[in-house]
Image 1 (cartoon, one colour):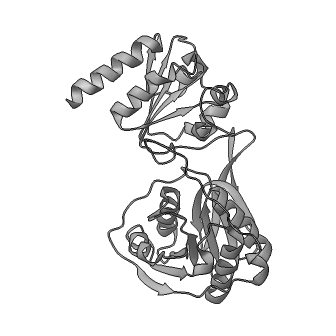
Image 2 (tube, one colour):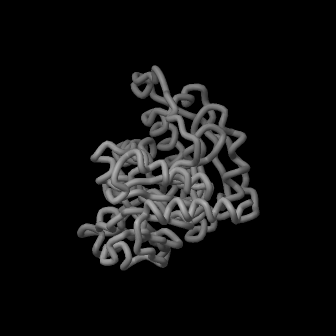
Length: 319
């Protein structure tokens, strides 16, 4: 079994999701390779090797500078066909999802998406995903190779292996029709802290926060802890906080080391997005709120009293 992981990068850093999938793939297939696609990406190869890639293929070409999917489909399809990879894995993102879909069509290959785990069953890759509104887990497979897999965001945490993999350059055979789309502008969202997918600590506000202005209390706590602020769908639908911060079935899946929920009821749609958090702390004045059922620690009280006090204590402890 041979496995290739698409290593998406953001500037000079490989994304946390890609490195997480790479580490998981390496635990299933020690000969797992990674592929970096873009312009000026050769310097990221050593980083990939440290996270489990036995070999890193670098497809570095000026035609791949813009983060557009179709040229990357051409480049990766050529590599998969030349090397004969059995599995091609992606960490979910807008770009990776486009590439995975295009690659599936180009290679006539099966694509399983929204996966949360994989195993090696006698040389056969088996995926695991949730179904029926995330109430059950099912095993899924493929009928032929190459097998394409797209993993939920936050499914795996990156872990360094301590060894650098070999690096091999590969050519990009970009078709003329793939260069029809042009990127005219690219704006970066201004942020004073980590994204909710990257943060180890999340302070999440639900409808119980009461108003958009009250989110300043959560922002103060997140800043004191060195984390990020997240939200629920109800908050986003009310226009209180940006969609980029939404956790849940229609938002993002996260797995921070510490999740603090303030005024979050714990609806199943939200639980889907944060249930893999290592430690869950909930603050809610309703002692019967569903979120307490799957929390490690719970505080029944007014979040507007608890959160500022907690922020104060954190600042005192940090000096």
